[in-house]
Length: 237
Ligand SMILES: [Zn+2]
Image (tube, rainbow, N blue to C red; front, side, top):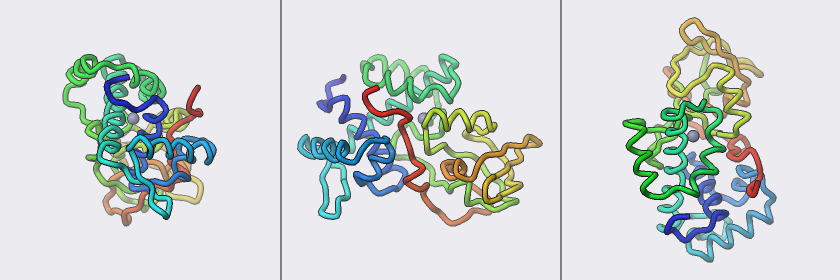
């Protein structure tokens, strides 16, 4: 733990809230419960604690908002997480589908000095290996790959869902943040890309969680909350 006063559990919740906030999804207890795969009463209790400790406020319609301190701490945690992920892939050579859970464990134990050294070690990398900005809050707007029409040219911006099983699926399918491709099939079950002669196929539900820029582009739409699952296991593992 650093000098911030939040507990480990509070940090996990602040991180999830920030992901929702950044993705443009409503910050509600229901969305937090879905993202963390936790039961509603558990989440309700912890949101109450975050409120008492001055990190969030709750409106009468149950929407959660960050206080200034809450938003700052949440952005710090998220940024540190992404920095560690980038360090693990670029400096230690760990595949990008294996670093999310490792970063979850490491982010609580880092001193400011180590953090500074890691920032120096990653050079001019600006995103985590899944495409999320290390400087939290500065993300490029994208559209879900599932919405893109056949014939459109796409660039993969980021994977909205960092559950390890999903990342492994995306890696096996041949997708990478930064990948340029053309959509060649868009069926009810499957989306197929052509990446310079290489065929990448993924299910439509997974394509919902992949943000891209496209030309021509469909109208903007955020990923559905049901699909934004951030933790593959319950907190407290
Ligand atoms: Zn990441």
